[in-house]
Length: 142
Image 1: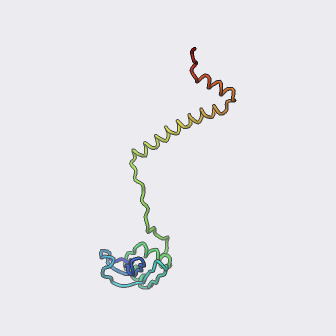
Image 2: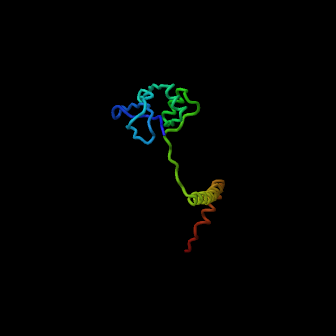
Image 3: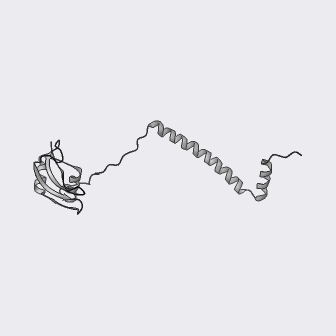
């Protein structure tokens, strides 16, 4: 299978890429069939051979995600851009999800009760609060 992708070059922290036509199973730095352009990510400049790229796409060549995004930007291909960097999804078992939902319900219920009691005490007048405090304290025997 033939693919159009980026071939790295340049210095270590100053990468530049060639847009090349190569076989999919070859190494990135391996043998290429044809150079179709270049891309400099630091200066955000690129050059494409549009007619050559269209010719190979018609023959069934595949495209890497970054090259696809460049072609969409250049309006060679229609459609939205692809996500190049994928985010990791959190894995959780079904049992874990059920437990968390149950815990939330239990925790929510306890908080409501505590909140309700606190509201009742706040609504009481100062005299009623002092009476309720006296009732809570045990009586001292002399």
